[in-house]
Image 1 (tube, rainbow, N blue to C red):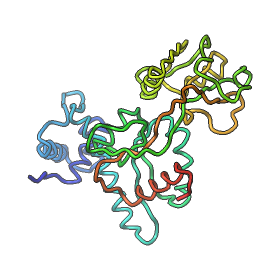
Image 2: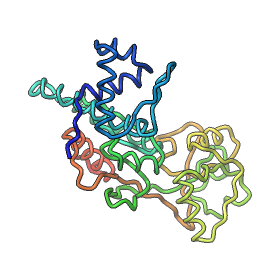
Image 3: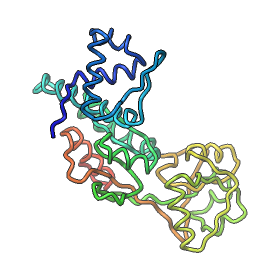
Length: 301
């Protein structure tokens, strides 16, 4: 069965969504409103369902429209990048890389690799979805991004997970705290301390709770936060100690916060690359992924 629509149908759909109406979208695309409506109707006919809900006052996305919008945006971006690259072939290397990344890796690790990559390929654009572990897996599975950096594998047979790095959970404390004078602490040492923990909705918390339960270790907390960066703010203010993955801690010599290993037991999460089974990556993405893997494995690509 063939799906019959044109690139301009996709552009019409995204224009109506971004400009929140048919009038401005028609003006931007330099076409009449009836012609724009026909474009939308053809796209809806191709997918077999309505993508937009129209009232006299506003236009909004249907559930299917919300699901398809990021995929259509990516398709248009890749199409435009391919045309741009073909036009400039032999003169410059251009393109776009789209990936989903857990926030801790996106904030502390990913920028250094992107900086190195940009030195070699300054015309490559990046679209980074900093998502939770579960949302990142879904983004890869739906084809919204080319690959993901995640702390979870998936039971989906259409996805592959390549482990790359063991990221241990560590203790973050102020430099003036007594624990800062130790080389390491045990989980038992944290008894009676004011602990900052990430919420139970986090994949990090799920992994940590499971590992501690298996080792028969009970950890009570005084503060529960949604974002790991918030926990570091509480530590810096002297309100408590934080247990978090090493990648989520400040890199280099921080003036206030210092980290220490936590032992008995040692708990770590596994960071890896999630891809669609059998999916082919764009050349720019292949080059970036090679550099990413080489950096994580400690050897320059």
